[in-house]
Length: 575
Image (cartoon, rainbow, N blue to C red; front, side, top):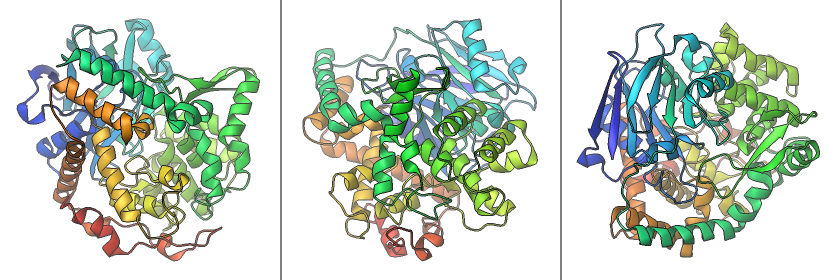
């Protein structure tokens, strides 16, 4: 268990044992607790006092399936709040196998300076001059790095957007094929990495120095039961391998909760053309892969490889949120266009979600017409060019709204909403409003609850409690490195018991189910405490006014939750 601290101001690297106060923490739990403890809440997100923390989950690097999520934390230049954004791929597993609990990047490099951070199989770290890669897009960059340093490496990197320090910049992670197709997209953490002067982190794979497992035999048995739970669950074992997350396009449109045309409608006209079923048909016809392993340790294989009409690779994976943001919000119903846009966003290094919402706000203002495929492509390319318009779009929907004088911006705390309209899914609106990190699609998503028929999405009843419980649970899961898609099978019954048994076997503890909730609460408390220090109050836990005033077709409902309802989400827990 060790930290690697990298000071970009003086180019020094230190290795230290994990301090006692951080022991047992990983992923989001570590990034949030550490940012709250070590970063001044009022600091400039792009200045030397902010820290970029890269942390595998507490179970990453073990034989446990689907534990390869990497958490990246900092103060966000997009929201001004604390932020954790996570991605799949190969980096978390590589770091976990080296016994590296976190990489902490501090200070900022001199203007124009750019470095790579290289971590070898022994866990040694070094900074390498990267000025030759200045301005390079992520696909060309990773290909060059693999050629120079070998293919048995995992890579985190930024594209031009991160170097421009744009607030929608992502950090791209290499998948099992070495493509930078997995994104820690939310919150603009690519801009923080760019401000630090760090172009990429390269981690040698195949390390043989993971943290010790306290009870290897018990861990092995628990891991078998976790894998069984993931494989036999209808969602993770059947739905996701068949259609991936894109399978949600049809049911969410059927619910009238698919925000379209800058959230003016709950159903996209022509959604059938971009559904998971349509995508699977297109991919199969062209010889692509409808089921694909994108992340180390994954047994779900919910990724895909979208190819063009000639069978040439375009992107991996085309996810539900991206189909919505670059399709539903912009009125584009052509899969080839959306796939190309997904590739461009990954290549340039910007969040597909925030970018799609930003473009939708511009279209809503009359800059271009909804459904204009060429216009959307050109607007994304403007980001790479660094033009005035490109920088505005790359700064997110709030910046676009100000530029075009359009107050109708679907964002909370500066971050664009996700692919579930709060008027059609009331509980998701609760999560958007109260999540410490801005509108977020993974912090406490109720879509599974609604599709299971356990809660009426159009009524107030039960929404606050369900959102609260999910936000607490997800904060805990995000700390382990467990994939959100697999975690759905580990919520109750044998799956939950096996997951807890794996944690206890890893650390030699006797944790009970309530302790998992306590971890989630600890994480949320740290995040809310940081935000309070940064000047955020309950008044920031609100949705834009149009959600309360404009009924959403086809149900013609508005967001029903009062300010008191929203303030009660964490008030009862004193979070």
